[in-house]
Length: 305
Image 1 (cartoon, rainbow, N blue to C red):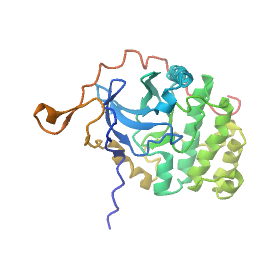
Image 2: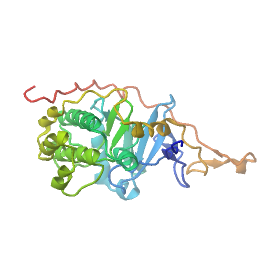
Image 3: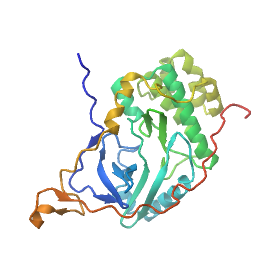
Image 4: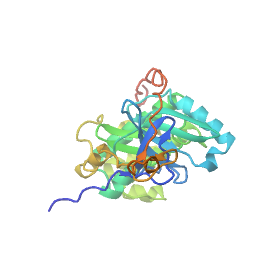
């Protein structure tokens, strides 16, 4: 019997969704795009004039109307744009003012870890090792720049063919120092290894595979250097189990067409033509140099290096 097709990765835009955000053409909603706090906005897939896919997070007005939030978000965008890691979905653009607040990151064409585990269950031990080590490197790049992520969860991690991606923005206003990210990384690894959320770390460790229990326990205790004990290979073809890899084509598919007029569009019927809405053209491409910062050297997480 043929396996059922995976659910689509995108949802059609809804009435009131924008045609453009920051000059980028909005294509669809991301189905598992509730990044971190479910009340922190909507995530769309969008495109630049050159065809680069972006994930654009549009914050709700209850946040965007707060001048303090706007100031913190703009500062956060400026700081995080300078950070590079192979395992970060880099911040591409963003801005907050009286008209709204949004952030565009590189689109990672794969499911969130939360969705992957919900669909396929716990990851095999080698995949968990690769996941934890890759996320540790992504966090190290942020920490080397003095930046706490503040939102390391199964919803802010995406799994794609060449390795995990952590949403680089993180929390717009992290409550703790960079060291606070480490236990959260341990909980993400524990979730991947056991296939379930647990409120009690000890109970989760009881269900954890033996090979992973000690390094994850040390990470939960705030010892990031012990992740070197995982001895994981760099992500490569085949790092994902087949049932998770089967979800990837849906994220590479073309998003569904807009089936409702968006805010800022003109219904063509009013012009005596077909009923398809006219989408305003995208604005000019982003300014040269948005990716001009030099790459951050990949950190060596082994003790004493």
